[in-house]
Image 1: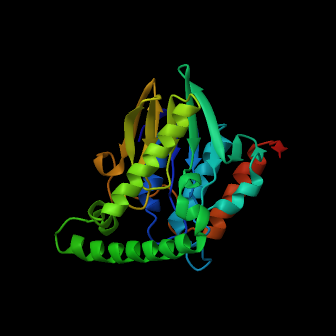
Image 2: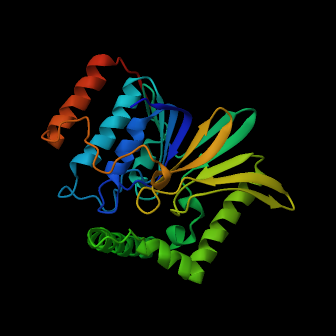
Length: 285
């Protein structure tokens, strides 16, 4: 399949290592594009929920695809989030075309762009982290229940549903939280003179112009790969929210180009060979 060029690709909230992560779909998508630059905008690997007992084949292949991009001299930024917050101590780390940081400032078409995960504006994250973690476990359980119900629903000839999305849209406090989050991000971006603010964290894909008495800013949210299966793409001066469910290229039963009988250890060894033998990298901290 011919790869589709994308100047800038932004993916967030993949939550690798959890039952809710749609790694196979993400892998299909990643292999279908040819990005010029990639931003992994937080919670790519879920270190809160991580368990050595659950790391499926497809999750390792997603990591391998990231290494493949780096090996092809594609710039990859890993912006830290709350579920991978332990990486924040490595902010500023750079190896070859791979960089870890807590935020990213870009300039495209003479426009100033501010990228960050977004949990810095989450009050519950700042003051009640234990409560947030408890909610995260409940959310993960809900996603697992949703996966089982969808498996049954599909085999009964009925479509898939998202329990978490339905709950979010039905609960007024959840809707209010999303609106407050977007407004806060926009206000801070306007105060700092940014033209675009791009984040993740709340698993709610969005692209809109926010206008206040103090100015205006383009607010974008890349969504997630748990509920919405979305990303943000920028190509030839145009921004858009990519939705996997609207993509007609993929076949759900499409075979991967990596042998299914390879285990995670073999894939990991292949990644090391690709990265170490084909790249002379400089490490900066």
